Length: 410
Ligand code: GLV
Ligand code: MN
Ligand code: MN
Image (cartoon, rainbow, N blue to C red; front, side, top):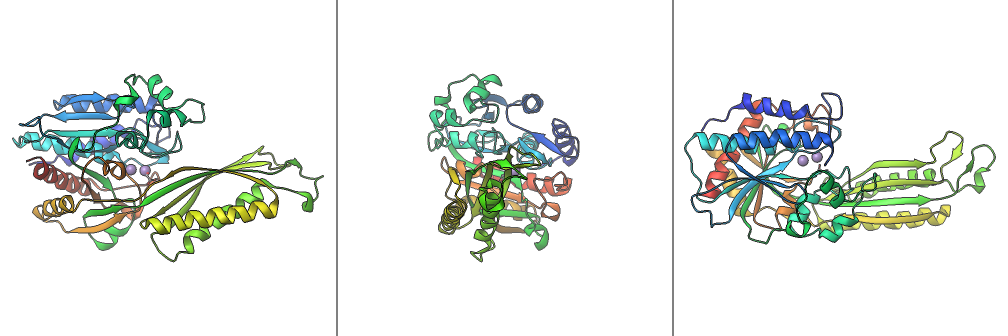
């Protein structure tokens, strides 16, 4: 089996040119023209290899290599190609184009799977446009119903279903959910996005579990006014309250003492945003993750209590929306073992680790047994333009994925 690292690097480079940010940064938001052009490029590659392509009402794409026994549940791999603003070129794309390269290499080797193999492009793993991550795979798993998708709106006022239709995905949203058992197994190849593999000198990571993410949207409303005329003791400054809240969010994660507790305020909008005007309203997002569900929920509770104390002290109104609060996912022992064996066959030492980032695997775990293969990220950097994994590291991941697919589909 021959994985062509140079061809794959070329595909990754071309895909990175479909971007709304200047290189080396990549911005590719779901259902934008840029996203649709990138998908068209990908579909050209998929049909070139002889895969049949199906797209659902959300634009989740399934490229199928028919197995010798098409009646058996298929084995799937895949990831996403949407990219958060000003990020890099490897997050998600390695799992999609790497999955394609694995299939190419297997076809060229003369392998014929018994179970069909499907490469999945999940729509919108990133929460950029509609606030919630993984709405494509959430819908596949049946955890986001068409009604719930219609309630998710982006800044332009369109909801997910309207935006999907506008992008040309005209199927019925009621048909998106997969029945449990639809797939025999799912394995996702992804960059680690953290420093642990590089630090350990391990070329391959085998994921044991995916951490539990939660997202809160908070709007704080105080009172605006003249920056010169309103005295300090009369103020109800929404930004000052938001700043206190952001520090409380940081303290809540630090307070557990566990390295796996992480919190981020990534969006902080101020209204009316004028030099000489007291902020009357702020909007902020709170991202909370932990490998331990109880600890994650404890952080959320602490943040909510702190918010109550801040708003009482400063006499503000708070509106809190819990956008998502998901349990962690556990990878299937048999798929972990299969990946480990595949790495060994390639002469590679695999390190077991937990994924602190979330992935579509988190929701595919509700459909079938899952596993994840990680490759090192240089400097542990991700969600930045300088995100990097070398062609050799990517090719090693693809070879391990290909062997894993062989074992799962035979
Ligand atoms: C996915 O990009 C995440 O935020 O974990
Ligand atoms: Mn990402
Ligand atoms: Mn990703």
